[in-house]
Image 1 (cartoon, rainbow, N blue to C red):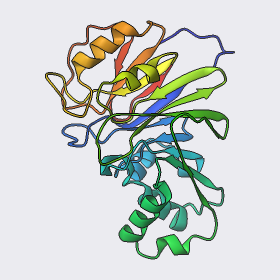
Image 2: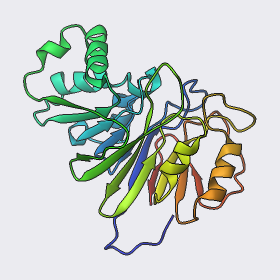
Image 3: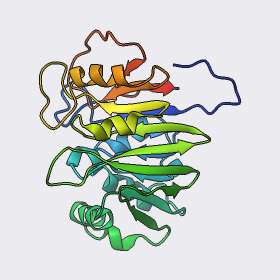
Length: 250
């Protein structure tokens, strides 16, 4: 973490979970930036927002990296809250790969039939992203970077800029030049580390993180998430391990 003057912008990252798809001793990975911007939406989304006292009505935008279940199946529960509990009236922006509106709305209809048609108080606005473009998302400027993860899905990392500082989020990815591009120039990099030893298949390993850390200036703080069980002894400066319900101010 950095020592910062009050004039500088802090990123507050609150992790709703820090585990990979198999969960193990961790919940599925997701985090909130400044309690307003969600990055991925696992099935435990609503319960963990409530546990962390993050008001559901305070969420202004959701960034979806891809459409695996551990990354977006929580959205229908959020919409259920907005319809029956907290009665949202402000628009909600959902940012994601091509097909984001069709997939999220269809999932919601499958999970809670009729809920899509009930909504009258607020709009869910969808933004489909493409690599090479920048998008204003309220006061953020977001640039998607295509990740290599699985051939069956479009997978994106996001580089978001706020008041001159940059947060990068890799989503799910295997190590590739795209991850290096995403990390360059970031003040904070939230990056998966799905296994402590060996090859993770279409994911990033701890050995990959060591190689990436050596290529990125020390001013960039890494936060590792999407983790398997356990806590290895890290031998790298500027690398933090996420935990379920942990908050970092960076």
